[in-house]
Image (cartoon, rainbow, N blue to C red):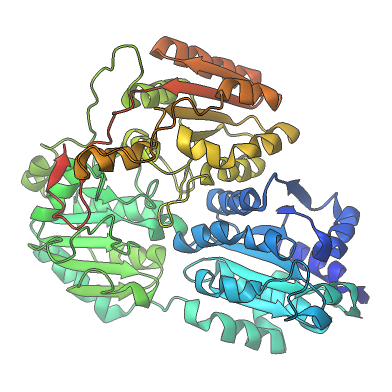
Length: 569
């Protein structure tokens, strides 16, 4: 049948099983938005307050469901506003297809109104970026984009379409997604486009070598990385840890790969890792990192990291091997598949003395009572007591993010939505919207700081319009807390441009201005009551929690230092 490019685009979304799109319209993408009117019963469009919010919402949808998210924006400033969200998805390997429209072909390269080279901008922060000039290329390009975004190590893909390609007509034949990889020329296109991202089958000899290393180890230690979460390999990972009888830490992106309350879990590792985790890294004789890239927030000083250990890295992406930390051995492959193969080779281990040593150190930090304000542990404790255990938690970036990860016991992949790689303040509310849209029956909370909340609090309008009962919990210390902590410890308390007191807004009044509810709390009792009220109200709710300005994240190791050199313990 003959269709316009706009209709082909929407039909291709249906081929991929897309049920929700997040976006913001504009002049060059109007043909697509006009076509969406006829598909309202099959594709839900969520209009956000800002394109960045749409990007984070699509990302939150992807992380919480394990499916490819979709985000749309118009050309020029609309498309450029997506870049922070695209980079956030890229650094955390989140599968999102970003669809933008550009000016017509005759205006490309002429500094036309709202023209920008979006593929050029996006190239370093995507797995692939396409510019579609002809309507005949559109369907197969979109099919490639989805295949690339969701294959191998996931990540964002950009498809920029000239406006005239959305208006032109061509023949279109619907093609079910399961036939894409077997359909003649399309299969070849998808294979060429995604061949660098497809994980190889684990090498049998490499598996046998690691099995032998495990048998010889006396002090094995595991790190659960983001690859475990992305592969949804939590069952295999937990069984592997139990088979080895080995303690296991997790990275920020690995939260939910092993339940936080599991008896083998030592907590987070790295800059703000627990003493148990960091000391175990320094004293183990075999370190196996699954789906972990050893970022500078984990291996702060690569030269001294796990010096007593044979280091083994299991990763889907060959380029991550030996990039940050030299390895003794490595296995390339999908985390779930590699772990399944290892479980066939590894016998039951027992390391009681090693575990006793590791777990003699704290897995969670303690925080002193602050008098007339709340401390981080009290806030997190109240949330855990009142909200369901399977609550999805979206955070922004800063001290509150670390407190949340340290204290919440995440049970499953996709329960924590946070910006680990790019560190994006303002990520949380958009991500919470994406999670709530995809999981309407689950409680969703947005944990933030007063500095981060200012970044994208305009998305309260989206939350209110779509009647999304998201609970926002603000750790309000009237400062840019993480930056102030660094200034306190490393910059002789020279507090340059970090104070936020007397700068507003009143967050309770702000919530009310958007038609939501808000409460300001200073005690545990007030917080618990506000949380109960928020759950019962079934509407958007903002809770402003007063905490001390000089409250710190504990422990902390400075960048570039040995993992056991705690500035704050």
